[in-house]
Length: 137
Image (cartoon, rainbow, N blue to C red):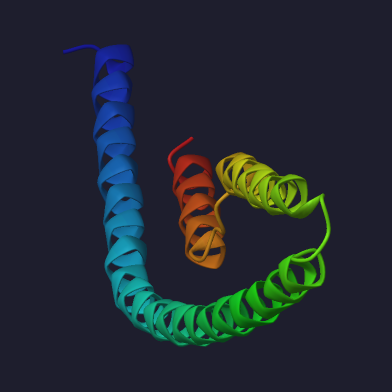
């Protein structure tokens, strides 16, 4: 074996050893981060659960109160028109307005973007993947 071949063989061993060390460091980093991810997931799940419960309770209370208020308002309008020749027109107009409100509410609900509760976790994983890619260069 010539000196040049011995030098290349030695540099390959060195290169392989540095790659093994590099992969070992990356794997230790990933294992350490898994514990952090688990903790972050449990925190974000608890926060998302609490936020969802608050929002659902508030929306149900708002919906019930709003429906009662609007129902009694509509009944008052119909009762006011009861003795007039426009009674049927008023009744049908109120029904049409309610139908229009339902259609508008449906369109608004369908067009809303869903909340991203796990944005922080996604960003952490993305940053860690970038760090791993950088370490493996």
